[in-house]
Amino acid sequence: KTFARIDVKPYQVQVTVAELGLVPSEDRFYTIDFDGSVRAGTGPILMGATGENSLDLPNNAPVSEVVRAAAHVLDVEPANLEVGLLNRHASTRRHFRRLDAA
Image 1: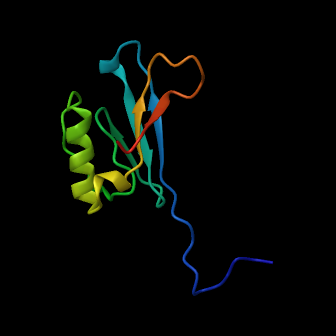
Image 2: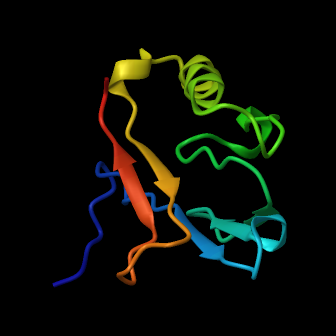
């Protein structure tokens, strides 16, 4: 069988890949959108937003400021966001740490 239902919207996927440098200033983030477009950056990444609705914050912005800005861009309450931080010194292959809503 094929997936050819016209009334059903296909999944839209967005992936972000982190390339860790030897020091934080060398870190690079690449976001691949569902349409195949790629964005590269060095600062906070906002998933779920289009290119024109991205964050324009410095790399050293406080986490609370990034969360507030993301909530504003996505038009949601900050408590409804899923937030992860890069953990450069993780002892596992997973280098992101999810933050609690508090």
